[in-house]
Image 1 (cartoon, rainbow, N blue to C red):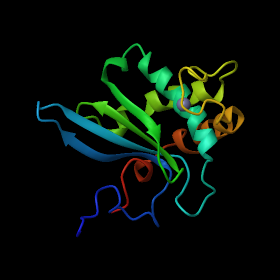
Image 2 (cartoon, rainbow, N blue to C red):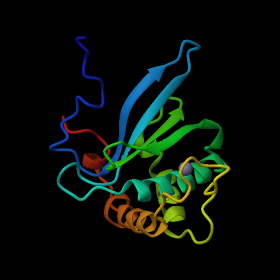
Image 3 (cartoon, rainbow, N blue to C red):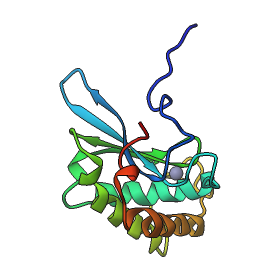
Amino acid sequence: MNMKKIPPLTIDHERLLRGIYVSRRDVTPAGDILTTFDIRMTEPNRMEALTPQALHAMEHLAATFLRNHPQWSPRIVYWGPMGCCTGNYLIVQGEVEPDEIVDLIKETMEFVAGFEGDIPGASPRDCGNYSFMDLEAARRAARVYCDEVIEGIGEENLNYPA
Ligand SMILES: [Zn+2]
């Protein structure tokens, strides 16, 4: 079977920095536009990736935060980890640009970085692998992303390398 490379596998990962990128836009048969964001937390193959356990804890926290957000919750479709463990995907309803969600991502990561207590949904009833989580690593990664990427974010962190 001759399969096409799909976006975002066509971007140059060797020059990709940490940031907030539009991975793709899709139009549903009903006409809704969906924007998939690449919330890239480590430089591919040049920095240590996150662990699946850290991303899993982050997934529970970020998804819960976003679905409860006073402005954005109705437009949040999905948050989840990338298989390569260098970031997350966020799918939002509408044609949204990265600079429009910088504050939202900052709020989300600050929430993760400062989270204490029981992770929402971390129970055998609510999750398929509930003990497979590393809250400390999720908190550290969110802190680093806020301090090193979101603060002082530039065009090179909002647009894929040409
Ligand atoms: Zn889970």
